[in-house]
Amino acid sequence: MTIQPISLSDLLSLPHHMIDMQKGEYIFREGEAANELYIVCEGKVQLSKTTEEGRELLLRICEQGDAFGEVVPFQLTCICTVSAKMMEGGTLAVIHKQQLEEKLLTDHAFSLQFMQWVHLQLQRMQTKIRDLILHGKKGALYSTLIRLANSYGVETEDGIFIDMPMTNQELANFCGSAREVVSRLLKELKELGIVSVEKGKITIHDVQFLKDEIRCEGCPIDICNMK
Image (tube, rainbow, N blue to C red; front, side, top):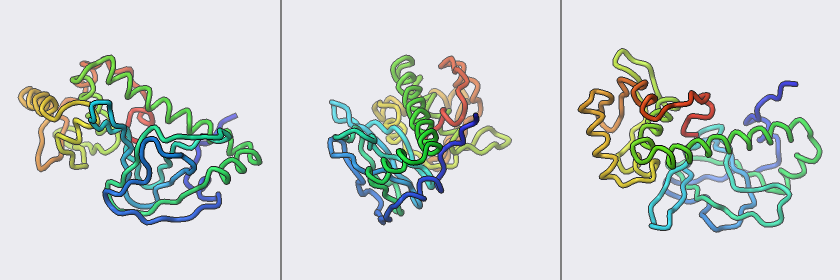
């Protein structure tokens, strides 16, 4: 039996309400109670975690149609392990834990789809943690560039143009590294002709070089991305 992935319409069929959020506004923070699932209807949301040293580690970018939240169905107490903040103003649909649990109990097809979605999120997170731990700062940057290419890349004659402005500090946050380290590594890649940067947007001229350096396992794009 083929299980269709959970869709925006599946989630929006649940009772929900809409909220408007401004750029820079937090939806929830680490340590807060988690009782809701969110769907991005408009705007962008970043999920991040703060390290013991106070450094921000960006884990995911959610866009229109993406669902996120720390809610765990049928568990009495859920605590947020990450923070969610608006990257740009937008609108979110909010589904309460109780409504989600009722749907899971009564709709078996939806339950299977939801389990599949949760498993996909775990796979994505595991691959990111793997790259951070196994390949060091250089590997973390290279894998981040590959994920950016998979998520926002546009094929051009010169290579893959990442159509999303990204500062060195933002790249560093995705890598769990210092801005100075990422700046140095980017400079090395530019000197080798692997990448170029213009007005904050990166073009990857040789993505295979990056994949070879981190011994890329060829994960499907729905896993190897920034979402």
